[in-house]
Length: 297
Image 1 (cartoon, rainbow, N blue to C red):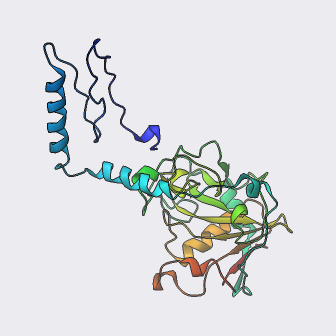
Image 2 (cartoon, rainbow, N blue to C red; image 1 turned 30 degrees about the horizontal axis):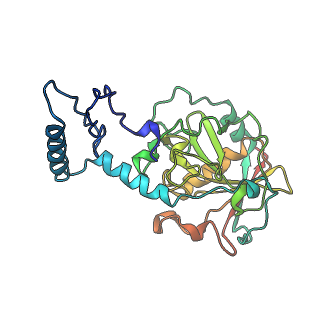
Image 3 (cartoon, rainbow, N blue to C red; image 1 turned 180 degrees about the horizontal axis):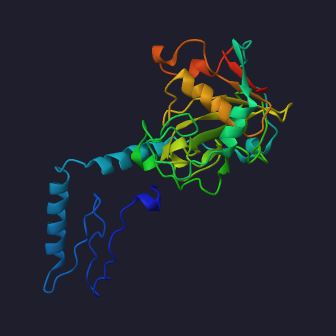
C-alpha cells in the first residue's frame, strides 16, 4: 500500500439511501472527487455514468506524480525485509578487504578547531558548508522517496566539537547490518542504520533522501569494532553523490573533527572526474583508501 502521506484522500461521501446500491466511491486516478447521488437519479443512470467516466479516464495520460506513485508501489513490492534476529545479532564477517593506504594525511589540529568553532546554521544554501560544498536537492530518486522527516526519530546528529557518535553498532567494513548511512548539511552530520525498516521507503529500509531532502554530500560509515577511535567511510550515495576527490577529502577531515583518531576514507587514486564513484571504489578485494589522522600545527 502507498503511504498515507503520499496519497490523495477521497472526500467523504454520504451513505446511499435505503434500497439503493452504492456506486464505487473511489475512481482509479487521483484528484477525482466521487460523484454524489442526485435527486431523482436511478441506480442504472449512476452505473452508466461511472462506466463512461472510467472509459474516458483510461485515455488520459498519467501525470508525473501519479507515474511516480505507480513506480514507487512497484518497487515497494520487491522491498527488502529486515530480519530482526540478524539485526540484533553481533555483526558477522565481511567479504571486503582494504588495500594498504596509498596516502596518509595529517590534518593540522588548528583546522579541526576551526571546524569545531564555525557555525553554518544561518549560512545561505549556496555557501560552501564546512569547506565541502553547497547544499543541493536529492537526485536520482523517485520524488515519493524524498522526505526529510521520514527518519527523524531514528537519526543521530553531530557537528564538530560535539564528540563521537554514541550507541552505534560496530562491525567490520562492508558488513551489511553494521552499516550506517550519512548525510551532511548546514547543521552537521546525520547518520542512521541502513537496515532500519521504513514504511515510506520503496526499498523498505533507510535512504539518504529520507534523511534530508537537501544535503551537501552523502555516503556510508562503519565504526571499527576493535578501535573506538577509528571509522571507515565511503561515498556511496546516488542521491547526494560526491563531486570530486577534494570534496571527499574534506568530508574525511570533517569526520575527524568529531574527535576520532583515524578516518579511513575509500578514495581511489584516480580522479573522480575520470569516472563515476562506483561499487568497485568502495567494496571488494583490496579497496583503495586514504587514511586521515590529526597532526601537529
